[in-house]
Length: 600
Image 1 (cartoon, rainbow, N blue to C red):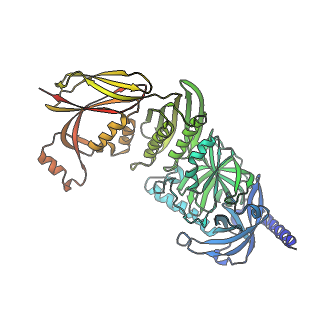
Image 2 (cartoon, helix red, strand yellow; image 1 turned 90 degrees about the horizontal axis):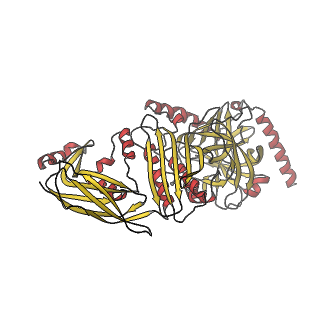
């Protein structure tokens, strides 16, 4: 009898599916059920893909309504689901957005799950009324940005006020949480996924190996069946030789407008990434978290908004991403070139570029051990000069040092306080050697201890390479004519040593006043393979709006450093007379400080 009842329920659901899907292309005519009309005990069905691209049904029973959950006037409808697949697997990662119908009316999207190891598949629906509000947010927030000169829906900006990828700004409860989002990864080494897994899981994403991936320009055919309610949909963060895409389910289609997921994805607001079709290989049942294993296929539009109540996308549009290329050299021989595109988003672009670099290196079978890597690159910014990258890394921690360097640079560019940036392209070149090339500064020799203005000072630096014999590096430094009589400080050291010293003595140099200055500061970054020599003298002064004024009388210093300057004055304790560097083939460590004397 029970099997007969279940069979009749499934037959009824299938008939209802035919009724709903008969209106393809006229999705706006599908009636909605207001949350006030939802009552416990109501029964209906949901749509989702469990295999291939075939949309299947599952049964739904309304349990009740949770009011004001997580956010003000944010309600969720509690449901119990059943069916051949969900009875075994429960609420499955990838079902986010599955539309639920009662009495032929769209109630909303299955979007939340309950418990860690539930004995029954209990979930929660985001009401369709709340999802339709996403379109209002797109219009209102876009107009606000345009009034400020921005265009977040088109540029993918508007994210800098959100939490960093490692944080989780969403619902903290382990009892009720958004359904997990499978993050389909293709072209990525398992070692790379292990490194970045925690970053994704903290956002409710589950990295899984998958296949496919759209190409720039899309090309997917669009018709009335494209991303219809219940279909699998992808939101792509990286595409090309590397592919990374979240997969979920379409809730609602009105013409070319798509609503999906029913809960946030990146917590980003404005977004601009490819929206793709997807196909499900199979469902992997798991007591803790069952997951759909999927492939992404054709790009058919763009995801333009990431809202509390789901994703908003448009069919037929082209996503604007950042073209990127990584050329990998084994020594001086070009081995491989990887072309891909990555989302432009302040919090996520640095992480994803970092991931691509790490994967390029790890894909060559080098998880650890001694190595030396030279990084060269160019980041093109629309409306500003290029940012040029050049540095050398060596030792056991080469990989994190390299990726952190690039991550920091991209983060500074995208999260700068001056302008909404647009990165036109990222071009990187990596040279890798299977040995350690480091050297320690053992000592410094000066050809004289007393100097005069206009003299030439000869400096010899003694280096001890790793497992090598000591070598000497020499440089002749012309001295300026504006030196004051008295002590002359000499600092010889690495990029890190010089930068830390400068942060204490002249911090304003790291506080650009506009975007052009920011680019200049980034291009003036010191590199690890150089020995820096700085000659300076104590000379109290200050800087106003980036302009340095050395040798100020005490009376002037007192006035400039008073409250009347309103914080625009920065004290400066020294004047730099000379800064030179010696290029080496090593990553240099160590430092040396000496005191010379300037005489008349």
